[in-house]
Image 1 (tube, rainbow over the protein chains, first blue to last red):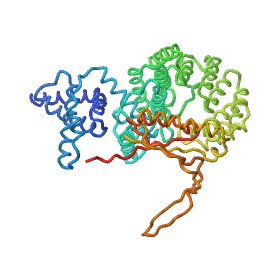
Image 2 (image 1 turned 135 degrees about the horizontal axis):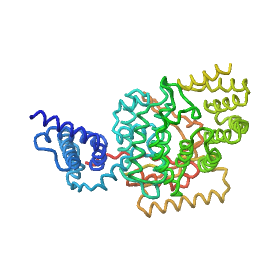
Image 3 (image 1 turned 135 degrees about the vertical axis):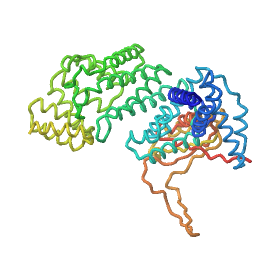
Image 4 (image 1 turned 60 degrees about the vertical axis):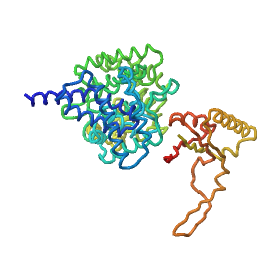
Length: 414
Length: 118
């Protein structure tokens, strides 16, 4: 009987940990003003919950209980440390003097935004922003983050320690950016989420084509951000991720070989994700304050809604690339636009554009530029040109499934 | 909290500016200095002589060596600094972004170590 209750309480604590530990952490960081202290306090609070809730019952508001217990434990820890190190007790006194604020929902949600913006602060290196966000906001362990990014755990742990050190020593404030800074700071958050998604969607190296977990985390982050801060570009990014994710099952064969968009079995696409993505895109476009993520999502939506590659609305896709190129000029977008033009006007037109980009030297090291050029040569029956372009692409590609795909194309041509 | 804002800019470019452009730049610096004095964020500031006037001093095993330098070929050289008082890094970044050279060169913002006053 006694054991039954203990087991029930443990299950309940586990469930609360999964649903609320990040919220509790976000608030503890604000109250304690220190990441490490807040993490210790979080673990102390949950450990105490397992002990006390079995005896005294589960409190009416477990989250408020955890926050107040965590804060109490942290004060306790500081007090003990102060006794040994005879450090000045001023910070401790201040901490003890602050009243426990009422747990308003709004305040708690603000703390989650504070945590996101602090982890994605542009004064931290991009690598550190990603590692810190996955660890503190998503609750992944250092080992999990290290594994996902094929980084040795000690290197990643070091990166996180350094980032926390900079937050503390340079005094990066725990706050939601002011109106005037919001757009720039939001960009930095969106970029972190996008990089996490991309790493999951198309791993930059390694044996498998996707690392699904990272994409799932990125979408979870995207949802959280839209919920907390429904800005058009946040919606656009979430839409973009959903629309790509919807195609996941059709992108590889069961053996892990990649399948191009035009050859994918569209009945495998996740309709619910596509619908959600399309709705978000429309919402973002209607705001007239959208940017590159929304435009890319709009392109992905046109692909997702087409019944086949040939039935795709290529003129509108080219039009969207034109707008995208004006707002966010980059050779990779030019390359994608050229591929869309090849679909609209024929391979010759696309090839002319890709040759121009390559001759500028902009994408000379980008395997997909050579692969795109090779594909168009192949369609035009220019076998020799196709072979030499695929050979260049193969030399530059680092990811196994892509390499096998290019090698297969080469065998087919020879 | 105090932050040191180190000003890096292309000093060759600066020397090539005609007198009126240099004067305009200096006027902007004066206005910036006044604005942070008024807001109470100014602690100290100095413009440095060009980098060719720099001397590197090292003491190794009690032996002092003095050399001309630094001979590092970089596009931007340390040309001066502001020491400011700011609430936090965001506040310091806000101040640094208004230093005239932020538009042409770059500003390195470094927090100052604060010793506990016993």
